Image (cartoon, rainbow, N blue to C red; front, top):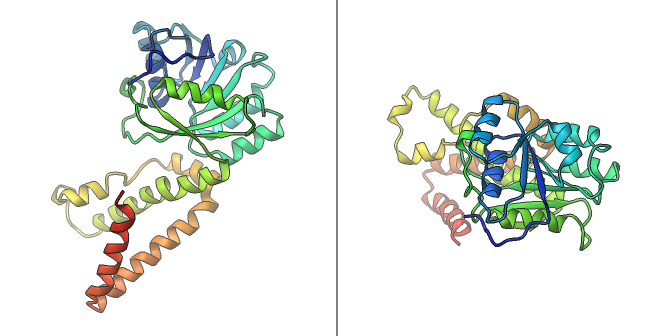
Length: 284
């Protein structure tokens, strides 16, 4: 649920990209008691037209126009696209405008922002959203309610734009938490990318088993829910975080090897130790 009483230090918010996350930011802001003016651009003209017709967005725009007029610029794009905008939009932003994004990889963005002298401009953000839906039509005002949002500022000093970006997420009902970019990307490699790769490996094993997917029981359906995905998205993940994926995959390989050894030896105690250890870690 959005927080209608939360004041925002922005009169005009520009959102580049109206997919699930960008569209949900727009819907959430428009639902506030005193919403800012919302500008948006989208690669899908139909999505932008629907947002305008619904009153979620007040003015259609372009990325360049948003950069030149918004008090808060939100790049709801891929990290690679955001990196390009940091390179090309620097001369367009208003004097006191704050710039943020919603991508899953932060090291390259924070590094380049530092090189470009954007300490007082750019603040990374990564909302931890678990929703398989895509596009503006799946966006909803309450998507971020109770959601953790990682904040990765270039400058950690008090009074930096990080506080302004945190106010955005609090107004949307989220829980912002600061973390440095290196730790963030390692965390994402372990907690987001590894589970997707593990689900894909399990799905590939099941696909090779000869059994149809409709034969899957509940546990298998849950475990393979994140299997698959687009090669294009993984191209970007490998480019940004490929060096961080080796340790998680090796750890998974080691755990599977222990299970295989235990099964071969019919070693119930070894299996029990793995079960207990995993269960103890998972319990709150």
